[in-house]
Image 1 (cartoon, rainbow, N blue to C red):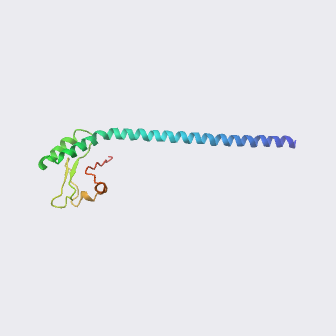
Image 2: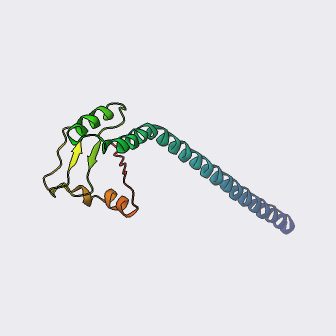
Image 3: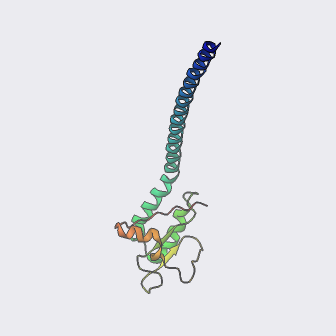
Amino acid sequence: MQIVSLCLSLVFSISAVFLAITVIGFSRIIETSLRSIAKLTIQYIDADIRSILSSPITITKATAQMIESVPQELRKTMLEKVMTTDPIIPQMLYATVVSRLEPEGYILYATDYQPADDYDQTKRTVILRSSKTSCFLTITVFVL
């Protein structure tokens, strides 16, 4: 009887070890699979975002290259027209690197939006960051 009990406990122990190894193996397979699916999903999302933003970015770059040659009194009209070329563009603006609070600085919106009286475009983080990298074109994406 003791031999049977010993044999059964040995069989159960070996079975438990194999079960644990199998469960750990499946867990690793599932984890690897989930990581692959997550990575692929992120790549698809990135591709979708790039695809959606490619037209507005191209339009913005072209506008930035042209706007300096447009007389100042026509710039708002230009921004209004350009903004309507792609429905994904909710706002376009042109701003000087000098604060609009200074006499030689200004900010021009394509819409009728008016910032707060004390708003200074040169204090925005995105502008400060781009000025440190000598980037003259800054594109900010707002998620509505």
